[in-house]
Every structure is written in C-alpha cells, then in structure tokens.
Image (cartoon, rainbow over all chains, first blue to last red; front, side, top):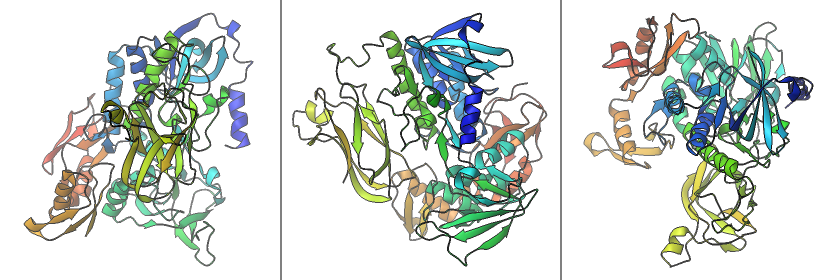
Length: 464
Length: 114
C-alpha cells in the first residue's frame, strides 16, 4: 500500500470525527459482522444459531458481495453439490440469512473501529448520518481487493482504459457497459481468464493474456474453457512494460522476461488496443484490522488467526478473503461458519475461551511451524491441542510438486490420528498423500483431534 | 490427446486414446471425467452464462444461464439470441427468460426486484 492510500485511510477514520459522547444512542449487540458477502452471511447465521445477538453491516445497496457480479458458474460444488453461478450461490446464502431474521444495515460504511472496555465500538456512516454500535466481538468479513497497476509498476502514460479485471466485470455484468473493443489482459489470475471469455462473448477482441511467470496463475479448467475454447492465446514469461496513449490507451508494449523476470532486450513488441485489463492478484482488505493494530501475516497478507479464526486481538475474528484469498466461495462460507460459531462461544465466556473440556486453562494456541521453501502459507497460523475441532489447515505449496505427503507433527513426534488412537494401534499419522500440489490451488488437511497431547509446545507442518 | 476436465475445480489433466466405443481415458479423479472426455471428442457441450438487459435503472442487467448445456459450436449464436432480450418484469432465480435456445431455456440466475 502506498503512503498516499495510508494517509487517506487515516483521514477517513480520524478520531475527532468519532467521539462517542456525540452519539445520542449507541446500539448494542454481542457480535458485529462487517461485510455482507458469503463470509459475512455465513458468519452471521452461524453466530445467530449459536445464540448471539448479531448485526451485519454492509456498505453496498445489496447483500451478496462480489458474487453478484460473478455471473459465471462453478460455485457451490462442495457446499451445495451443484454447479451454481455466483448470483445463484449468493441468493442461497442471502435467503438463509434473511430466514434467520438477523438485523442488518445496508449502504453503511464502517469508518472507525476501536477497543472500548472489554469490547469494541464500530462507527458506520450512511445517508442517514453517523451511527455507533458497541459489541463484545467483531467478525471481519470484508473480503479482498485487487492489486492495481501502481502495485505492479507499469511505466508509461496514465491514460484512461486501464482497468482491474473486477472493475471490467462490474461494468459488463452489473452496468451492462462495455469497457473495451480490443484489449490486452495482463496476468493469468482466474478473474482475468473469466473476463477474457466474458468480453469475447460480448463482442470484444481479446488480443491475448500475458503472464510474467512461467506458469499460469489461474485454474487449468479456466485456461481450457475461457481461453482455449475461444482461441485466445496465453503468453507465459511475457509482461506489459509500457502503456502508450495520452488520453486513452492506444497500445501497450510487451516484452519477454528471463528467469529473474527481467525484460529480455530485443523482444519488445507493440500491441494496439484500447484497454489494458489487470488480473494481477488479490489482497485481503485489512484496513479495519490495521485500525485495531492486529498483526498481519506477511505470507497471507491477512491477520494471524488461531483455529477458532480469532485474530491476535481478543474478540476479533476473521473469515473469508480478508483472512487469506480463497479459490472457492464454498471455503469462504465455511470459514464464516467457523468464525460465527466461535465468536458466539467467545461472547458467552470470553475468559474461558481456551479452557479445555476438564475446565483446565491451557492449550494456548502456538505458532504453527512450516518451511517457507515448501509452503507459501498455512492458515490458521496458530494451533491449539485443545481445539476447537475439527481443525482444517489450509495451505498453498510454493512449487508445483508431485507425490508429496503432508504431515502434522508435534516436536519430534508425529501425532497419532484420532482413528489410530481409537483403534488402539497407535502409530497412525495426521498426514495425507497428495498426487500433485500446485501453488494456484489451495489444499485442505482436516484434523479431527490432536488426541490427548496436553499442551504441546510445538506444531510443525511438513512436506516430504 | 490431452483433455482438461472442466466439470469441477480439480481440472483433471486427462489423456484420451482410442476411438468410438473403445475410448480409453486416464488421469481422471472421478467417473465424470470419462463422460466429459467422451463428449469432448464426439460432441462437446458447454453451459453459457451471461446477462440480459432490463428496463430497471437500479438493476440494468439480470444474470442468466442455459438450464442445461448447449453444443459448444452454438455458443456465439446463442449469445446473439440472448442479446435481443429486454426484461420488463421482476424475476426470481430459475424463471425462464428466453425459451428454446438450442434445446434448452435461458433462465434467471439472480433476483430482479421492482
């Protein structure tokens, strides 16, 4: 994030705007859910079902989050065992949320969040003015943002016609306006691939998708059905190095890159186009986490959490894409459920949250160790032998690897699996064999229990 | 020949050899891969998702999809038919927006409130 953006954030949430004594009434809830996309909707329903009073705050006019504009299908295969489009998936989550009659506010933008006693105060702005809410726990469900052209350092003019893939998607699918007649797509993330197909279907010419790395970032099925089906070329180890055009994009310069991603002299080529569409990655939206000084994992770019999905700030939970950028909405919803359930438990008994079944305090979450050479990241980052269970470790491999076994170990000891403990044989492992793991596809290792290990002091995830 | 299965996000890289009833498929994680590979070689089918225009200024587009798959080669023709539609009434998920497009219906995938 640039300094400019930071300054802007601070201006928007400056403390002199928000002084509690200026509010005539402060609404009180157990839990405030910030964000009405799939993570927030699932979190709110789960918290409500677990007995908490919940308010969901959404900044847009409608619930559903980014799924509203993801009109393509492939959602819900895990959660609903059906292939749904984004709007259909969103509608199911919205219907479930509305049926629970959970209070919510729309077109309300959270401008400040701060610790107040043992809980938190959240101030949200809407057309009606500023409103303050107090709560015991907060669930961050504010999703992610796209990286911008400033963040990938493209040289040249600041002409009109440079869009993030999500912005292009908003123009086409929500507003029905075409942002381009002939475009170049930089980056092979899934949204870029989806937009290559979408713009082609709507009559635009997509010259090609250019990826600086030597492997595509998106799912292979999207390379196949979005590019190959329409004859759109994918150029690997190639990037856009300059944007040409003063008022509007007129062309871009592309160059091949070497293994260190430096442009190779003599490979420069000019491609005429009226737009450059960027699909160069997503970053968790952590402005509110930053406002609370919550530690951020440099690997995920989202908050550190334990297996209850609580951040390092007591009572603040995170789920969905604010936690780490997920491949599937199904996993976003699922993490929302975990955060909602645990936030409700936290509200009932904040001090006993890490108390085990026998009433002994202990099992404080410890930082999960892993090799950065093997893994890009692992979530949750903190693990406790006292639960809650099941614990699912989400991880991404750093490299494209074949025939690997992922094992969860404690100290020098590999943990016996629950099945092994139950059948008395021992010697089982919490491990899973993978035929192939690729960085663009998140994997999940489900752990039903860590047995009666007591207060393990070290957990390590290994790839062998 | 290599075929990437598009049925689910696993995106299995399959190898298909042989012809007709003698088709051999490997690399698939589930039986759906075999069906997909067979269809891909004989008569490839695709689902189509897009949007249609509405008369409502607050929601100028309504997302839609083919109820079942249509021939891959008919996708652009189907788009041309769908592009002629303008929705004048509120709709719910599953409502038919345009019937009988290459053997299936175009149905709403989102809600359109008045």
